[in-house]
Length: 412
Image (cartoon, rainbow, N blue to C red):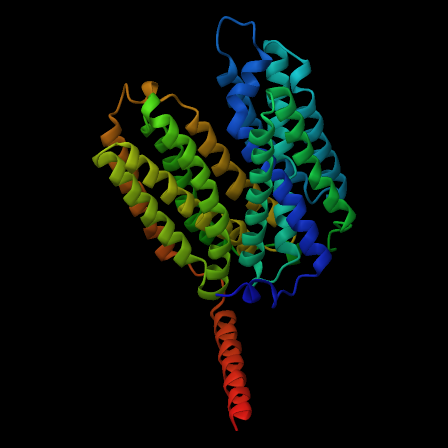
């Protein structure tokens, strides 16, 4: 699979491709960076409080992310997409910049809510834009490049933080700069809607049924991954593993996100999903059998690969199953909610969870859930049409035939 295959056959206009990549990668990079530092950031808003209120801030952040995503998916077709995207990005920049200047429980609730809104409100519309400007046989590859760009941007920001040894205030300002990169996308495209009749937007009932088949494993994967973070003990001997494993995890997401896009556009959406569910299920079984530094590192690396496979495919599937005019709703429900569930569950302290269930039992339950989640995928219809896959195979065969003919001419 060469990089030539990734971009050469793109039908999406260059300016729209650039706009989609910059718009979404800037937002997602900001989100992953913010999530990495969120406990420190929210704790800094209530530094003088005797109790640790940052968990309240996290709940509000993820809760408003889900709520605003649903609101954004509803109003996405009611107003100009550009009029939604510009204030959404601006809210994200402003709510990040003001973090160091306001303190107290009251401001914690306000800022956490604004941060959640600045994640969820426009993200369904920005993801719908990706599907609106791509053909189905290139959608996963475009999504893979967007995920790769997301983590390259996040890695650059993390490298700056570590190289310069930035304090928290400067880290927050850097995050605001990352968030503001999405504004550049507005210079590449007008983000106009295609005028459609209601009959052109209406979907057959089977589309919603297929969407549920794909949505269930995605949610179960997010729930399992969120709970699994607490399986790694909060002990000093695991600190280095957590740090190295998290870095390798993000590398895995970036690299295998691109590989997933190539695979999903060539062989269909289902193979990467099934592979990801099996991989994560086996990694849960491993750490449940014996929790040590080596197995914890293996889990973090494998989970990164699995996330890379799924992030990209589920960035394409809602667009595959929907039409322009309905895509915001599909992305609001099908992408934002599972991500918010993932990170909300990741914040649950392990000691609280393991009061009711042992780590070994939890890992076995999670493995079973993931393996069972393969069943809906097997029942679902492949969203990449067979004729598109066959067409690509024919093009590849013709290309190879042309190469053989050229070689014979040169040899003759």
